[in-house]
Length: 94
Figure 1 (cartoon, rainbow, N blue to C red):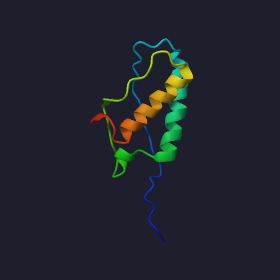
Figure 2 (cartoon, rainbow, N blue to C red):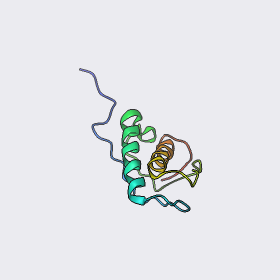
Figure 3 (cartoon, rainbow, N blue to C red):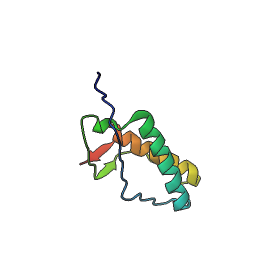
Figure 4 (cartoon, one colour):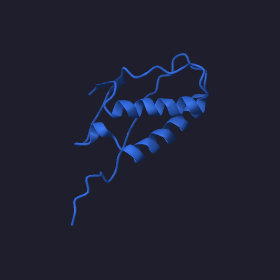
């Protein structure tokens, strides 16, 4: 019987997204963000947590986003930026 290296569950909890300089509807941004981050975590996992549970207080140093994005696109791009941070890119504050 083989040992599975894939965790039984992955839980990513985002306390707050701060969107300065954007005019998009926050509820629509949040919904798109959640859908895209869920998709990315299911597809790629959370590389920084590969060796066990991980708590991160902040992700910084991520690429800036253009202010004119639609709510849907902004949510997707934010999720991609957060997942990049959880993949070891940017700066992580544990």
